[in-house]
Amino acid sequence: MVTRLVLGCGAVGFDLLKRLPDGGTTVVTDDEPRAESLREANIAAVDGDPTDPRAHAPDADIVLVASDDPERNRAVAVAARETFPDAMLIAYAGEAARPETVDAIRSVADRVIDPTAALADRVLDRTVGFESDRARGLRRALLDAEEPLAVVTHDNPDPDAIASAVALCQLAERVGVDAEACYHGEISHQENRALVNLLDLSLVRLDPGDIEAYGGVALVDHSRPGVNDSLPEDTEIDIVVDHHPPRGAVGGEFVDLRSGVGATSTLLTEYLDRFDVSPGTTTATALLYGIRIDTKEFTREASKADFAAAASLVPHVDADTLSRIETPSLSIETVSVLAAAIENRTVRERALSTCAGEIRDRDALAQAAERLLDMEGVNITVVFGFMDEMIYVSGRARGSDLDLGETLRDAFGAIGDAGGHADMAGAQIPLGILGAAGPDRNGSLTEIVRDVVNERFFDALSDAPDAPSIEQSLEYDYAHEGQPRSRSPPTTPARTRRPATLSTPRTSTRTTPEPVPFSSPGSNQG
Image (cartoon, rainbow, N blue to C red; front, side, top):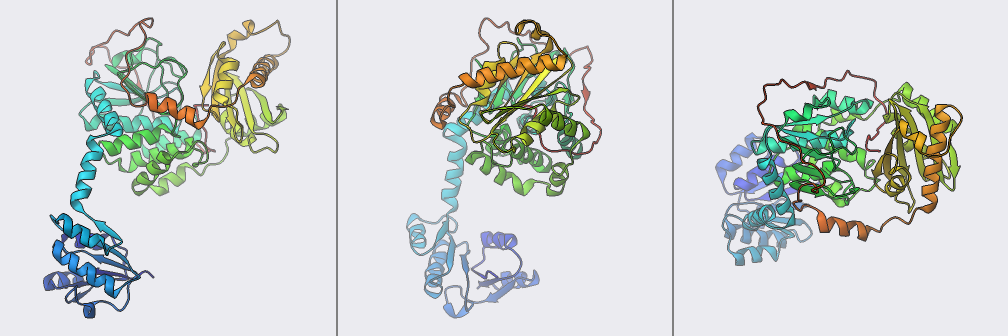
């Protein structure tokens, strides 16, 4: 067991004692009333002079010098170092310590806690530099947006999008702005529904036209209206926060695009810290889950920022609820899609493409793409199927120099929407486009879909250049991240704003998805 010796016990020392683990701690103080109160709290306390080695314990692994008097702490630190030359010595500088006193303590201590320097660092961290510029830009954009603000995810949102929307609404509330987390489509994936159900997250499901009931619009986890969401393409955007590389020009009063991080939830966690907002248990649990899913447990495009954000969230997380969300079984639909994908696969030079036919749950494609990536000899997977007059494509890559997002853009951008990351991407192709996709084809709809998608994917794969270097990706981030952007290009008509108070009642409804059996993780972004 680690033994700790606390020498002196002022206000800061008393707070430290409350945070230390039980057992293994002895306090030496010449403040008799304080020693008595510590003993009443079942903390071993000795009446004595902290500068006198005879009052010290016989041994200690960690020594904390913790009175409020700077000069007293200097003398105690010197004596403690002589008595315990091998111990870890941590010393509090004290209140209003002079620079020379702090220097003297630092010369013998392993670590000095200087409240003056800590306060100055905190103030500078919050008011000066690139990170604080971003926080001020977001705050200004929130205050300038017309209320209520719709924080819109991509369609059929995944955990990263859901958590990011909830967190941005919390930031808006912090500055007194009315905001709601909104989405189009369905929250169909079992784990995503469990996330909403178990954390009781407040989300508004939008129907076509409902966005007109809002004064301002923010986008999270995607960056352009009408691309991977059901907003009109001419929707005027106030705020964009996303970690995906953009396909084209991004408009908004405030735009934060950082493809160098693994999740949009990471960016929102940073903003919560910048705004001095405690995420609370619900938001923290959702954000941590969003980071873990989008980085595939920190194994896919994870950055230092993702690890730092996760570490800051852990103390607030409801571990039991998180465990219930992320320990699912496979749904029957997912098993069916996986079976069809295995049976119909085509593999060429470590790339697998497969058609699952008609599907009922598009999230099953992402799960199949993840699982097929574990097949021997495969480091690129593309799984696709169709439902509701739309072909959905989900791709994954591992251990490849290929930029999968760019490859799917090349393959399907001319006939649908496509994009994503170097190792996680997706596409959506209207079924009606197949008539113009190539020569006349005979066969069933499944065969036609399979032939068109396979042909375009493998053609694009053979022409694909190497993936951009990390330096190139960061060059984009440093040049663009956090900078206020102009509105959409003049060729894009602006949406006419409507007042915040309308006589027409809102037709959107709060989502109350039914609890369902849990299944494996997935992402609707690809």
